[in-house]
Image (cartoon, rainbow, N blue to C red; front, side, top):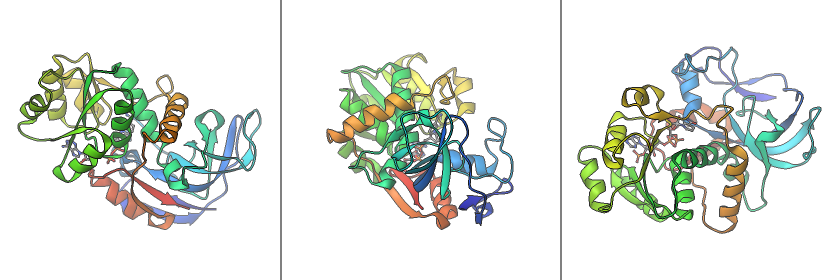
Length: 307
Ligand SMILES: NC(=O)c1ccc[n+]([C@@H]2O[C@H](COP(=O)([O-])OP(=O)(O)OC[C@H]3O[C@@H](n4cnc5c(N)ncnc54)[C@H](OP(=O)(O)O)[C@@H]3O)[C@@H](O)[C@H]2O)c1
């Protein structure tokens, strides 16, 4: 099959489209003929070597952790899925490829209403958004600030929170404010004066804060606004969370909430309360360009590769 491969840590130029062996599904796994693969910041952090302390990889390495497509092989011990099923979910081999593997308990049937790119854009963003809101224990009637609210995770987190009756304040650069308003959030510009700007739009206070930006100033503002670290969660930058004594959620095996997250997302999509925004869709061969765009850190929604 054709797949994007890299043989060393480095800039996006290390990504190559190559012929590699098809992966074979093991116990509890399915193989998916990929139609689309989501691009996430984690992909370029792994490729550059920035994550090598926490997530070292062996070379050659195939990037990508989420996909949509059609099951074309089923491993032993899999029940509930068969060849021909249209699915989306987290993958356990590289998803920037014509075929990828997934644990059967990490995939979901694709609703007909979702396109392949839309379905491929869901797994990481919905699981992260759902897990973060659960960890923060955000309830209807409360006010939540989301730093970096216009990107892949933020666009989904804002909509789930709004649908649950939460008042959301989202930080973004001015060019993304109309987008945040369209999702039901109150936009605020990040940078100097953030705390005062938030107090001006939330005079009754802020109950909880989710940081998707990985900036120390976002955590500092969050602690000031919520009155402590109890209801502040960092997911973008582990190193910045420690000096502030703020919890970091990495989504490891014990924390992973993919099943209920996908179920809630499908329900909200059917009710017209969750819209998936694709920042850019490009062919597999343009994976390096896609990662360069992701690396700018200023997306509105998600980047997706089509296969
Ligand atoms: N721990 C986990 O489980 C987990 C899971 C998924 C993702 N993540 C991490 O979470 C982060 C966000 O992921 P994503 O997919 O949403 O990324 P993304 O699509 O690249 O979006 C990043 C957003 O951050 C905003 N931003 C940039 N600089 C900012 C600043 N100084 N202050 C506030 N906002 C700023 C950008 O908005 P503007 O263009 O408006 O500046 C952009 O919309 C990444 O670091 C990713 O690796 C962690």
